[in-house]
Figure 1 (cartoon, rainbow, N blue to C red):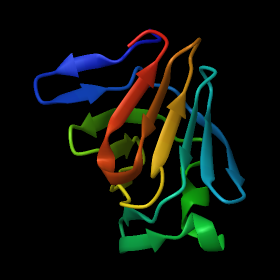
Figure 2 (figure 1 turned 30 degrees about the vertical axis):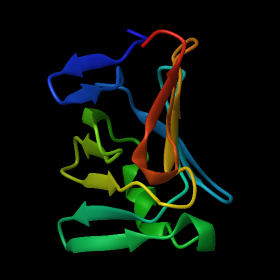
Figure 3 (figure 1 turned 45 degrees about the vertical axis):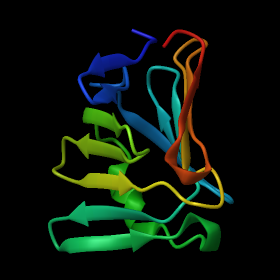
Figure 4 (figure 1 turned 120 degrees about the vertical axis):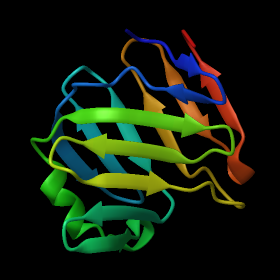
Length: 130
C-alpha cells in the first residue's frame, strides 16, 4: 500500500477498496478516501452513470452528479501513460479524466508520502513511494 503498481503500459493507484467518505468542491472536485488519500480533479471529467454519461466541470462547480459517489468504494483506478485517469466504483459508475494541455488535470495524494500529478499535456510526475 502507498505505491503505484506498474501494469505494463499503465499504473494502478493503491486505492482499491477505499471508500469515498467526502467530496469537496472549490476549483477542483476532490474525492476524500477512507485510507487517508485524496484525488483532486481540476479538468473536465466524464462520469458514466446508469442514465448515461455526464460531463463534470469542477472549474464551474458543475459536479452535482458526483455526489452519488459518496459512500461507494473504488474497485479499480488506472493511470494510462497519456495521463488519462480512470476510476471505477462499486455502484457501477466510472469516472474518466483526460489530460489538459494547459494545466494539471488531476492529482492523487496519499496514503503516506505518495503524490501523483498529471501535468499539462499528460506527463505523469510522482513523488514519494512510486
